[in-house]
Length: 78
Length: 245
Image 1: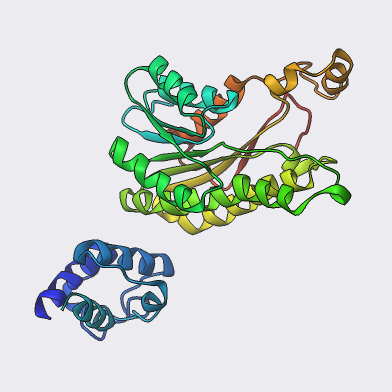
Image 2 (image 1 turned 90 degrees about the vertical axis):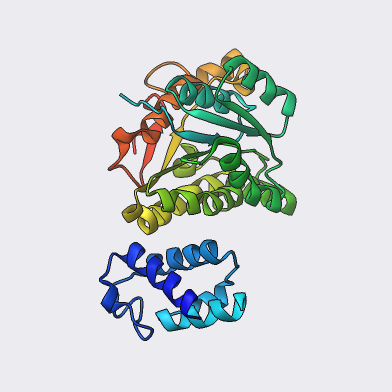
């Protein structure tokens, strides 16, 4: 879990160019981290590549926060 | 100007006259090209002629799965896919009152749906690298209309609307989406016209002559280049003045 959180956080920081302290589990990509809808798509693509998993569109829609991403990915890779 | 060294381009319909000219010109500007079409021998002949930096990727554009997979195959063959030229197209001309479902479906599938599928599959890599060029070869009749071509004109107008929408979606990622709209281009199809038919056509073209594949390829090279960085969602009409839009 902590490993997933670490890797997700790294991707989010790199992709959205935000400060590390802003990337908390509760942080919403769009509301708190300044992402637009295209950024969200790109983040999901980046998660897919990083963890070598497939995130279906209906699941991707529900990944709104860093915590959502960590939870979904942990379940997939766990 | 228009140096494409290091860029990797996929050209569909490379067996046709227009696709052949486009592939040659992109290649001449330094790009690596992946040639796609249905007739493998014709593609191979072109690749052999071009020599280095040419790959052959046969694909049937009416097969959705094959179309979805094509950009990935191109990226694997060349290392990346930076420039997509969706040039393949067919006609099934018929007055609407006599048009069969399959004439409509086939034209929409090969001309328009494949453009959607190719673009969607090509985008992932382009977005990641923050650079990409999607170029759809449409037609002047997609804007002016033409009797007997409701299906073809709908597909070509559809490509233009698609390109404008996608251009807005991805502009901030360094990916541009544009169309080139040829007018009457000399081809095996126009070679068989009678002199009367030809002069009727030419009377409507201020330039007084049919266009060549090279005329179209020049516009494609421009749109593919770094120089066209700020150009997106546009349609370049290359038609000798027959329609000024």
